[in-house]
Length: 209
Ligand code: CO
Image (cartoon, rainbow, N blue to C red; front, side, top):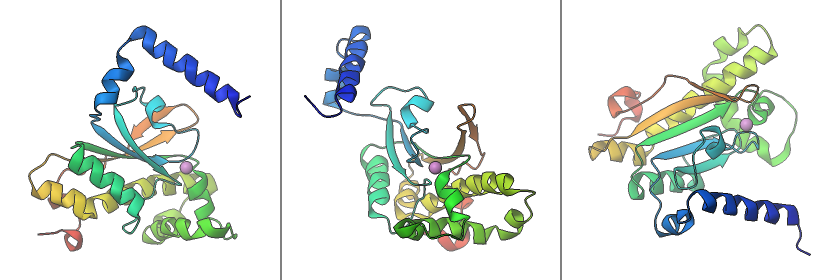
């Protein structure tokens, strides 16, 4: 008996269901992928990229980590971005955070969470950049929600500062970086309206000539 049998059973019925509506679905997909979007989201089990925007396998390239952070020295995230931008030639990168993010919440605390505190420190930096606004929040919930939003906006900027995104723009490629946030409460996505489409929209110190 296979361990985690239920998951394998689920997989079989899922594949059958897809093949019923499109018998060639998997064979077509096995020959190539041509997604139009790169999704950078939180690892949270309640925020699954494909399901939230209701797209099939093959339509979105995905990188997830705790609290959807883009760190300039994270080889994992940078490799995903490079592959998506330069080889898959995707045109839209979406950073999608979510309200009530456990990673962001932990970053607001002063307790020891172990190794992960080193990751969450990047979010404490976001707090430091916007300390006045965050300190002025009426309560903890408002503060957490605002930090979740500001964290997305900061990661959009971090993406735009990478050599990968800037070189794509320099080469005349169309590439937009979007910041979205998802409500686990009601399943609705919100556009934070911070879309960046070119180097003239980023801070001067980060601009490559
Ligand atoms: Co989260």
